[in-house]
Amino acid sequence: SKSNLTYAARAKLHPHPVVKKLFETAEAKQSNLIISADMTNSKDLLELADLLGPYIAVFKTHIDLISDFSPSLVTSLKALSIKHNFMVFEDRKFVDIGATVQKQYHGGALRISEFAHVVNCSILAGEGIVQALSETMTDENFEYKEDRGLLLLAEMTTKGSMAVGGYTESCVNIARKYPDAVIGFVAMRALTEVLPATSSEEDFVVFTTGVNRLAKEDKLGQQYQTPKDAITRGSDFVIAGRGIYAAEDPVESAKAYQREAWEAYLDRTK
Amino acid sequence: SKSNLTYAARAKLHPHPVVKKLFETAEAKQSNLIISADMTNSKDLLELADLLGPYIAVFKTHIDLISDFSPSLVTSLKALSIKHNFMVFEDRKFVDIGATVQKQYHGGALRISEFAHVVNCSILAGEGIVQALSETMTDENFEYKEDRGLLLLAEMTTKGSMAVGGYTESCVNIARKYPDAVIGFVAMRALTEVLPATSSEEDFVVFTTGVNRLAKEDKLGQQYQTPKDAITRGSDFVIAGRGIYAAEDPVESAKAYQREAWEAYLDRTK
Ligand SMILES: O=c1cc(CO)n([C@@H]2O[C@H](COP(=O)(O)O)[C@@H](O)[C@H]2O)c(=O)[nH]1
Ligand SMILES: O=c1cc(CO)n([C@@H]2O[C@H](COP(=O)(O)O)[C@@H](O)[C@H]2O)c(=O)[nH]1
Image (cartoon, rainbow over all chains, first blue to last red; front, side, top):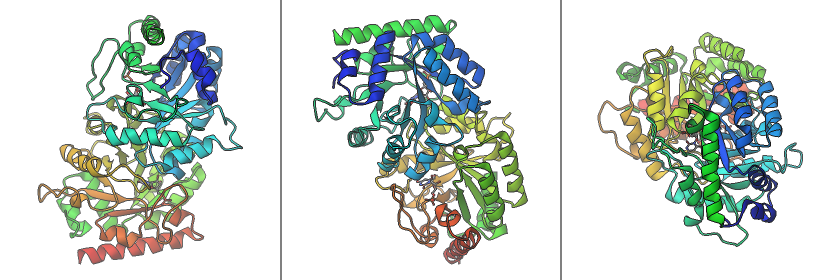
């Protein structure tokens, strides 16, 4: 793992353009923070993106939560992503046969391929889903080729999660076979603990959900760690939702999360 | 398992209104066939529903594939469901923390709770997802209370599926805890082979995908069995997509699938 190197160093070494851009964005903004923007209408979503844009590296969406979704929302979100220099991660968690996910990702109702630099999928169905999304993302005629990356959902934060053991190991093994598409994992820590890197070149990016500075859990099985703990365990980008957007002052909260996660990163790389 | 009883007998015995309706529909139309309507625009979807409506018990959607999705599609689909007396199954495969899936199911962009009598979820995240969907579906103020059911995605049809062993067993165990919401499984066979019924009352409905009369697989890992084999193994409703809608004559194909699956059911229950 390259988690002792700076984002700047990793950006230089990494062959994938989306990873380069992620690390460069983090360096430029001194932020390894992702907001989980689980808003339920367009106005709230765009306001949050504009408000917190300066403090984040990535804006994470569940675009299907938006009751008044329309193609113009996609246009506005893309404009804010440029204005504030953040990338967009649609947390779709694709989990189906290959033929279906290709149509869900590209050309569907939610226009995911058009706005999301990063998407994720589960390998519950096996390797075919990764093969299918990889085919679409690296197709010669795909408009966003080289500007799209895939994360494998390797662990989950919830009580009783079955994304453990052999499932998590398979994620690492499958990721290694699709380097043009798979850029890393959604996981609670660096997965080098699970399967050590096979080469000194290997550098998967780890996005970590279930991050909250105060709470330990919610009422429906969600479990949390702090930003500092996540980064110390090898996470590269921490994702917080309610800890930020439901705070009394979301901007102050975002700044506090940004500071804590960034300091933990400086500690890890010094 | 009650798979040796007729649908009519099971409809009488079953406490869940959605299961009653499923079995009654099957009896009324002499069909245990579900079409997987993986169309990518509203016109094609509605045309297929109108064309094949007479031959099916349930119409299965991936509503997020519809490039021109709009709320009026939902209205039209509901009207066709009444016209032809079929139920609707949205194959969403929810797989997230409880707080997120509640918003994806009810009130989101795709209006799933409004049109889908049946939805499914994976238990990769643990039991919380089932608890969460069950809460929403059985809420006193939920408009469609008692007209909605949940299937657990207990097995998958794809090469290298990880929905096996302990994962599949956990589906059965969790299903037993939420009888007001969970009506059965998406699986390739009756799951009594996996975990024998704990009571003579138990009657989970089995929906089976990966059904095709001719093909054995596709290019992205999908694998098939015939309608007859599925029903003989204890499936209650067989789901076919490309085998029907991509056939030269979809109506003739639907009739052939309907006949084969219904005869296998008559054989099983005689
Ligand atoms: O295992 C996971 C995976 C994900 C994302 O891939 N998530 C998502 O992070 C966010 C956590 O929000 P919170 O910080 O408000 O709990 C939600 O959008 C949830 O769907 C989790 O909470 N847990
Ligand atoms: O394990 C599964 C589960 C499902 C649904 O829950 N499916 C779905 O059935 C349909 C099979 O289509 P086909 O008959 O054209 O292969 C697709 O919509 C696919 O997403 C599968 O194909 N395999």
